Length: 520
Image 1 (tube, rainbow, N blue to C red):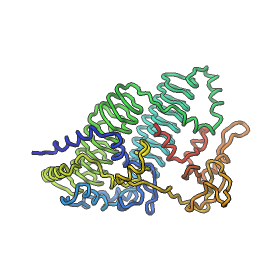
Image 2: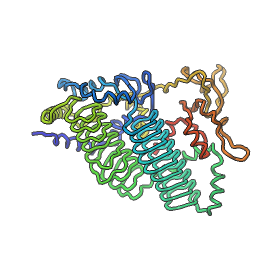
Image 3: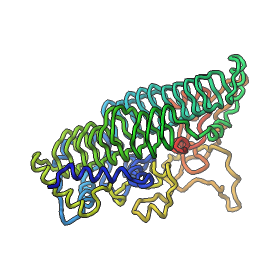
Image 4: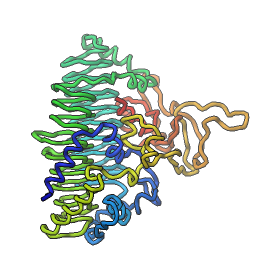
């Protein structure tokens, strides 16, 4: 007779062989770094017919205990995923996912036990002052425009995969180092500029050792031309060095062994298809996982944003065990196809069962899914609520529009609209072309832009007569239009950081700053 373990094993064996591209399309495409105005609030969810209604996270949390009453019975005349879609469309959804012990989080998603987080994603465990960044974990502070900054790192600007380091600027793959500029693959280093593949070195420029006094003179001269910083960073080595690791493939590993198809890992052994997995010790059986933050984990198959044990084909699961095909459940166990539940056990489609009833019904449902040949599938693409080209999957792999639309993903075809009040001045990152014969600039503003057109970034930053770097505080009162497509602003804490460390005002949109760090 078939039991629950029988169906678990079917899912396990299928997931152990997922092609990486399928993993990206099916799971990673549920993670977005693009925000939209949905009805009356800003949200990660665009306004489409794939969700019901977006509400603020606070309102959502206040209503969660009532969701056990918003259940549906399983309709055996419909497919398993059609049943889930019915449940999903019956419940309001949060604008952003903010977990407990977090405060002052603005336009940010998947935030846990952190404060003062702005336009950032996946910030976990006692982090503070995080801006325009993705995957920041474990006691990090003052991180701007970075991806994967971990374990007591601080003062990081334009960084990618930074561990136990501070004062890291425009650099990649830095471990236990400090005062690093435009460098990559450094471990145990300090005061290095334009360096690559060094261990335990200090006062190096382009991998050449200098006396301390000469080093600081050369460093000061090299950092004078602020207009070259972004280009310097684009030219920083993108080839990783895998430290203390054996039999590993793909991007940056640390203390890992026997792994394949990964990006940004730490402490991993014998698993496949994981991205942003960190601080894992003595664990086993993790396949197709995006963003994991628990210290202990066992038996994870097709999981995104979670911590717990024995999880299958689920997203946004925290402190839970034995969860199957569920979306955002907290402190739950033995749930199948449930949404938003908290502190519940033995539920199916949000409906409460006894333990005996639950096992009996689950075996019946899994048997039907097995007959449908979808038991091993993740959430179907046709219910994915995000535009594919706004997701991490698009950042990691160059999928074609034709391919993803053919598989029922959505594709954003228009620019994201920005509502700018008429009284706000709009400046440009670079000088604009002269008007054409028709009287319009070739890069003129869209019809939804109502701000007054002003100057350029260079009007707001300069060296004074004593060669001190200055940024006009009036930059806080304008909107900046990047020449490529989108608008952004400079906020007060960002301004203070730029002034303190003599950094230029960023000349590309905040989303594209993050994209530079995904460009492995």
